[in-house]
Image (cartoon, rainbow, N blue to C red):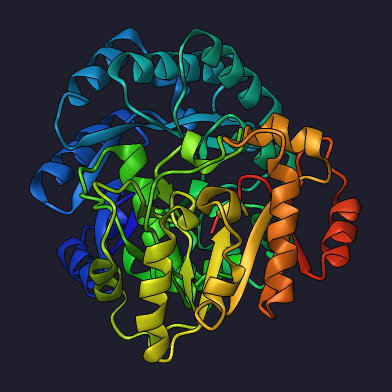
Length: 456
């Protein structure tokens, strides 16, 4: 299911065929739509639409163009409207210095009032930011000193520096169908730096119809064009983009959608197996310290799966490029499960890869590479750093100082056994990536640098 997180169904543009537009959205796979208010009257209409249609949710707020109308009475009514169970955000609010239809001081005062209201009501903000990067970041940082600010920068049109600052503040970001425009090369280039874990999809309908439909009224059904574009930009499947952005929207707006935990989870054309949540490292940078979701998949297990559970979760392995033992923990803690499941899956034509921290020999108190020969085709080993001291500092291995040398020994033994081995290191402060590559080559392995924060 796709979620259009920013649409203006209440606008008169949809008066002739609003019901039909919603039916077209459903047919295109749009399961939920958040109708975004942009005025006092629009806030009333937004709530009314959300209460009429099951698939529609609402935000309430006043656009910076109308900041002059943000009076005490207006704020009081916005607060009352926000009591509806279908209201999931405050917005769209923010700053617009491009058109300056309201004086800057009034825009800032209104934005600060809405930030305070969102904090009071524990609702996320839908933020309009145009030609105002410095001020909007300053205001949000100032507000975050008092209490957390949660929300999305909608219809992103800034540069890479503004994008980074928004992401560093923990905000979500959404781009409209304007990234599909032929002349949007610069924006698409900026979008390549967008971590999919912070991405939302929006049409901003009736505005900004995608390339091929320009000049027409935009509508939620056209979001499939946006899905295609993001798949190309980020190198993920359309299924990945759909799943991840739906999870993101559910997380930000509290839509109450169930996200059950996964044993087997697909990313691109590979199937990953989550067989344990235990790990022998406690890495500062690990996703486990931040979330239980990877690429939109819930990996927090209720219990460790059996071999039968794992094989059943895979189904036909030939549907996938490879089967990867890599979940929310260190898979070699369950070496017997890897061996038994891999044996069954290899019989069905699977190619098997294991992603590991390289502690397998320490965990099992023996050299395990020969046991996995013929069962595992390749290993991805997280060496992470170029020195033992930095490794111990950031990874905090359960086995202490000997761990770094043991990881390198594990890599050597897998290489000697004839398996394909890839060593990965992270662009952490103080890590020399060139030296990491030299270490990998000296061990007879391939090398792949990894970007911190990018998982899956």
